[in-house]
Length: 276
Image (cartoon, rainbow, N blue to C red; front, side):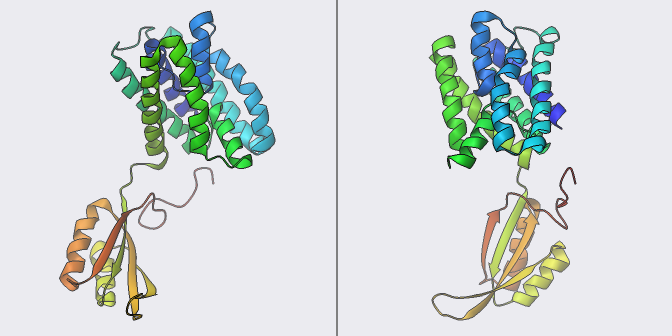
């Protein structure tokens, strides 16, 4: 997954970002700025620029386990970035800045998310962000914003402020794409149901929807009366069936439906980790 993710990122860089002079931040963004003046290979600069950050990561983020995945990710991304020069058109596929921003951001984020799913890191600002988070208390999102903003600021002076502003949009799009690739589009809904027909509704959910149910004990804050709360997780497509089922058995029931980030276990994704 790290290999695939690194390849996707390199394609995004070579096919959309470099031809359009768009910078997404991080070491690769700095390499683009230097490349503009020196024509020094971007991939090689990414590799060299990650060496001091890799040393810091080794010291602060977990030694050998951190090192293997990070080295693989950085080296492969650097190699792909320079090798793809010979296979992809230097002018990219379009000269439309908006299209390059959207598709470059999507592809870059998807590649990054795949690397994360393989428990790798993108190196660069990713390492720095985790160090700042662990030892200074700065959130990872704040650390990314700080480091990437400095690079985009540099891009404004080099490529112009219009492209720098598009670079900020690209960073936002790639972040959303990375999150979706890492965690998947949420199709899970959680429901909490307060009803006087606890047993009937619980049995109906287990029978008709074939979903597990947990009954929690609670009490009304105003009346002090004990109440049972039904908790269950269902797919997005099952929400309407759940509403109808609850309404038919208890029209006066109170139900809260939330969007779950992820559901792991029986009936959903397996809890087993990728490298277990």
